[in-house]
Length: 157
Picture (cartoon, rainbow, N blue to C red):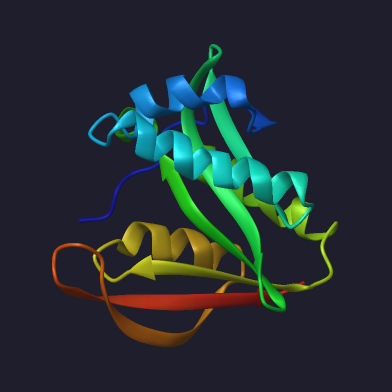
């Protein structure tokens, strides 16, 4: 069943900072140990410091409700870990974060962006295809609950 988009909601985007870590843990990854989230976001900050990518935080009324990472992987950029809190999906936040991250690619030595999506997430697949991404390979990955098919999409800017 297709999800109906809601009316876009007023939100802000900013680059990840250390000050976001605790709130992102509470909002997006509360089921994970804080130390794991802190370590992951610390690696994201390191990527940003090395100018090898960027990380975006979406906020509503100053509360983080979304996150996305862009990182150089060999000769291309990859968008990963794109997440919007369930209550705020279908309000345009994912689209805004993708646009933001695509803009960050212009500061990197590549024009190719990849993104992966599980077959169990057709809504995200359609979102990426609306931006012009197209599937170039499918692989089976163990994402913690056995093998799952993951489509990898690409766009050349």
